[in-house]
Length: 224
Image (tube, rainbow, N blue to C red; front, side, top):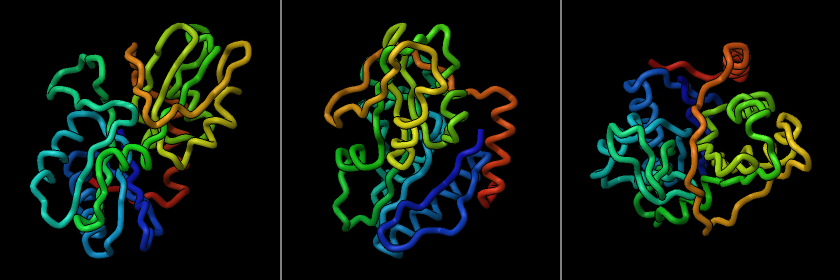
């Protein structure tokens, strides 16, 4: 699975977006973001990552003095246990990092609110609809921009996205889902994500090829 690394900086933004395809590549990309945050007094953000990769990054950056490296899940407050695929109540699985110059005073709660958005989808027929990863990809949302997708019940799904794609989801996603009166809304930043079944972050082969082509056309830089 590839990850698109973007700068969300207050000073300058890279003209091309790198894609990491290995842990080594991810580490190099995050190190580059950390260096930029330290040099430019800016705030950078990674894409959403799987737990194994995120835990390695957290371990490497926890004692850095020049930057803060804040791990955010969006609506979840607990990190998953290492090497445990079972997500317990309150735990998040996919997470991203907000990297800021140490003197900017960024805190975890602010990072959660500004770099993660939780969307609730109601009145959707989960059993009859396409999977949410496929539905999101169909409207042009890369899974790099998507955190956990939690099925609360047979008609309600909550999912985490980057703020940059929130309007796109609210406007277009219902067209890719089955249900009467499907509605999407942003969840209050102080409301916790529900506990439920998590959808696996996999795309159909056709959509996966389409998304990779779009990344290349957009000028993504390949790492690893």
